[in-house]
Image (cartoon, rainbow, N blue to C red; front, top):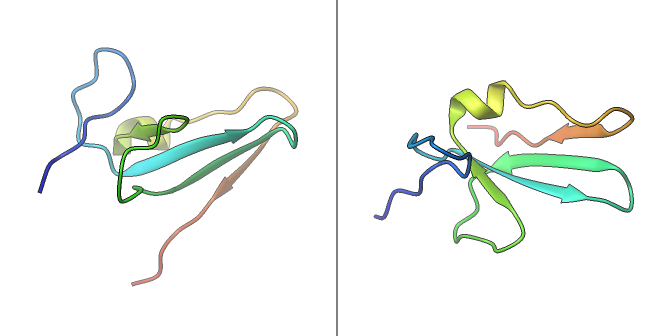
Length: 67
């Protein structure tokens, strides 16, 4: 299994979530790490996932997979 790194510059943490933006609806979506890297999304480590903030007026949706 190949470990993907966080997309944040100078961060070498292991990616655990994938973030995408929906500009039309002013929405930030964070969910489980996608099975494959996507060109228009960002993979984040747990530290950067926890620190995530959205632009003013935007909504954040977090999808959590139940065990």
